[in-house]
Length: 448
Image 1 (spheres, helix red, strand yellow):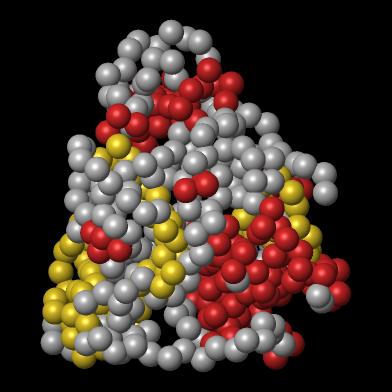
Image 2 (cartoon, rainbow, N blue to C red):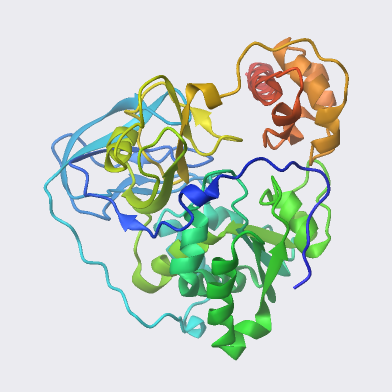
């Protein structure tokens, strides 16, 4: 295989050796879960249960009444204690369903024989099963998958790319999916290809994951019909190689213009973890109620990859990894160190988009005392979107909202490369996020 990549980006310390060899372990069944009705981009699901109701594992508890939305299901069986506002890992509080478990578990249908007779499913049925299962992007963005697989009629999709890069430091959940569930990943890709009418499928994997590449290759080598349509693409280990537009550039050499989407160049991109749960939804009609989460970092006692029920608290998950390591302050991130969001409390729940929980010692975290910009242009040189982060950061910080919009601030993918290389330690990506918030508030005010 020829090694492919995209322009720009950075090479942080990946620290994946802490958990890459750790096989997935099923986490303990939680006694209590807090399941947010907003775990995806788009409109929150609407609660269809109330306090006192008895629910079963996998039962729908939140209905998606908007196109860009996804239903939510009970991850354990038990009694609904309340439907109320609770903290969310992305910040703030959202309406959530709290379930007190009864200790019972459900046996989902499964088979040792991986494979699907996709001829029995038309494209609409595949999308319906995916939507009914509440599947969203498992890489962290959590965009409803059924929406992504329903492009406008004037958009022709010829290629589907699975993102197996997992370029975020510390995280190895996707790697373990490819190693341990390679068959599901490949057959899930095949189902996604059929749902959008794509003739070709690609699985992009960085070259620091040889075991995953071997597992995927074994599946393709064992079925000529799969190998004819699906290709594994070896990619350079670079951050943010897994970002949609970078991935499309590296795999297909197609450039998605600013302000446009992958479907505008005939491509749909999904995460390898998403493909695996798509397989479960189509073959077994299993909703998305659990996911693999990497718990890692130099502040955790025993890094692990755990299969965790949605709604389990960060505190319970960290305790299952031996708790926090040593004394002193820690920073706990929902996600990895480049794009993760720092948490104020461990009472927040794991959601469908929680790919990792990273715990870092305080002395590892970048200090907040920043200096003046020295106009070195380091941030410009690494920005994969070819933006000017130093300018956008100031525009966001100073609420120069019209200028922020004019300089394409909304096109920033918030990868954090700019903050990573800044010699003045300026929190550029945080300021750019603030600029986006300011812009949304301005547009909301103008439309009201």
